[in-house]
Length: 389
Ligand SMILES: O=P(O)(O)OC[C@H]1O[C@H](O[C@H]2O[C@H](CO)[C@@H](O)[C@H](O)[C@H]2O)[C@H](O)[C@@H](O)[C@@H]1O
Image (cartoon, rainbow, N blue to C red):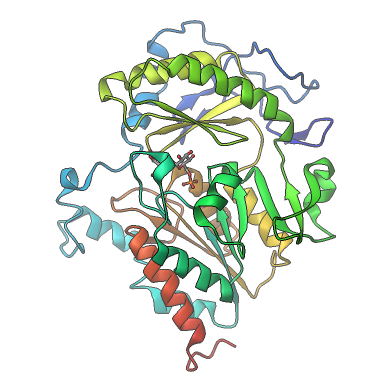
């Protein structure tokens, strides 16, 4: 990783990148670009593919990734989603052997948490709110809000979302949490003087006050990309406006192109149009979410880095007596699961009703199980019989 003049973390890997998670070979990222200028050394040296026709999106696997990006509706996966998996013939049952339910393994988790301080990190869409067709209507239930509020009374709790920070804050509506929007590229955290990140990225931290007048640190490692994101946003809106059902969402430091409501026959068209627009923006890259293409800056920052940053801001990083737990449902949450797994730091919990490979340690089936898990944590913390304090 290199820094540019503003000390923004920048990916400078010059080897051809085959990102298996994205299924996009770097040679689909072109190198001509108009917009902000960047100092030498921070630009990726990416070989350019000349074709530009539909072969692009087929050969790089976008369509496969788009098709597999969200579990099909429940009636189409009847065998897997008929309730609690109970037989060895059931793929979900077998998957649970590798990713045990965090509810049935609750005692195991809390045994490990004895004498430790739990820090909670929660994704929003698909974790706290169910996946719905209209992203503007992904409301969280009042019961879930109450559960999150309660759990935050006992454990430091942060929401880490792909949405803009303002939007996710508006949906969750709780002031007692920490919020990271734009996949962790826009964080409000507590003020802490000796943050190691402030040595590496001094210009990315702004001292600010939140809506309650409390002093906070605002960390925006992709701040200089804002004009470029606004530019790509306009192009994406323009180029998809004739595709029925498509929707472009402004997430401040990234842009989502939704195709959940687009006829499957037109998914390749969505992919092609986005691909064509990205040819003019080599400093932006694409990740796949649940029936959504997410355009974001090429910087070495993700939800995993956001977890590390927040732990440090909370004074909980590199402490043996801290157990971070991250709950999420999406591919972008894998970066956070990985950080916890690799550092043997804590537990990732994948929310999924269908078997899939993950860096998480445990699983929960859906947001209703997430709520049950949060309530169980509160009861455990309140229990006079536990011996962890
Ligand atoms: O990191 P997250 O909080 O999980 O945000 C990821 C994306 O979530 C939203 O899209 C997803 O949920 C929508 C509402 O249920 C659904 O309609 C869409 O198909 C899903 O992809 C959000 O709208 C995106 O901007 C986020 O990037």
